[in-house]
Structures are given as structure tokens and as C-alpha cells.
Image (cartoon, rainbow, N blue to C red; front, side, top):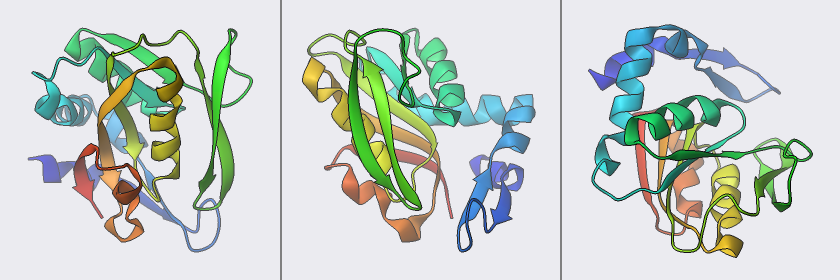
Length: 172
């Protein structure tokens, strides 16, 4: 049943630059049944893991992360691009497959010892994922697992997550 979600992912070659195959999730999130299935399967391994918060990266991680937080009955922590958060922030810079970027988190987004589930639509080279995990360290939060809708296996992104549990629904 989960494999049926692959048909809802559109491949866009050479975007945002030549050689990159962008995995477009908009057909999946437009389909209520597919979106419900995806979110349910993404959180299934973590329902009994005492998760305190779900974090998602801007922007597509907000879709899955906020729905997952709601389903788990916990809060959502947005990880945003620089200059978008209005309070004190911690910033983490990282390299992308096709450039560099930074993410920010409010300095009071989690308390010491809180257990965080990190979510996004895709893990590629792992740069965004690794930086996202590091954002929680200064506050004492602990990313206990990462969940992704899509993983291009050839890019080996999970290898940058320091042995954290990684749950992916669709492998390409």
C-alpha cells in the first residue's frame, strides 16, 4: 500500500539545475487519501517512543511535520530559513547538493532532555538533515529519529545522521 504513494511523486529532471531530479510531492499532498496514508506511515514507528516534539524543515517539512505533531499530540518546531523567525535564534549552516544554506530555530523551541522527531519530505545528501539535528544540541534537545517520505539511496544522506534511527517510506 505504501508503494502506491510512488505514483503520486512527479519526477522533474534538471531542476533546480542540470543533473538533479526533483521529486515533486504536490500531487501526493493534493490527494487526501495519499496524504493521510503517508503521514500515518511516517509516524507509525514512533507512536510509543515518548516523542516530545516534531520538527520540520522549511518548507515541505512543515507539511508532514505539523500533521505528524498533530497526530502524535505534541508540538511542532519550525526550522526556518534565516531572517524568518522573530525571536532569538540559533543558526546552523550547511552544504546542499547544489549550493549552501542555513537554518534557524528559536532558542527556546525545546527544553533540555526533550525528545524530537525530525521530519521532511526528502533526505538527499544529508546536509540539511545533519544541520537540523545539530540545531537542537545547544538547547539540550535530542533528535531521536528522522522520518522522510523520499530517499534517493544513491546519495547516501542517512550516513550523515550519526547513527540516528531513520525511517523512509519511498526509496528511489
